[in-house]
Image (cartoon, one colour):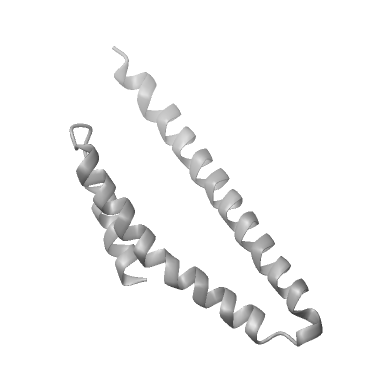
Length: 93
């Protein structure tokens, strides 16, 4: 989680002139930070479910990850659209 936090902070420092190598570094670091969390979460959820319900547990876990990612993207997109809608017209002139 700490590695993911550092990677996200690093991405927030990128500018329009940042190169692909610098951006790739932060994406690789984020991937290395998120991977153990996802695998660990799956192990905890599916590993603690009764054997006859392990398929259901895995399905619910994957569905929750998909819904969470979609909802997060939608909320972030709405916030960014609102911010751009407020700031951009004033900067057109």
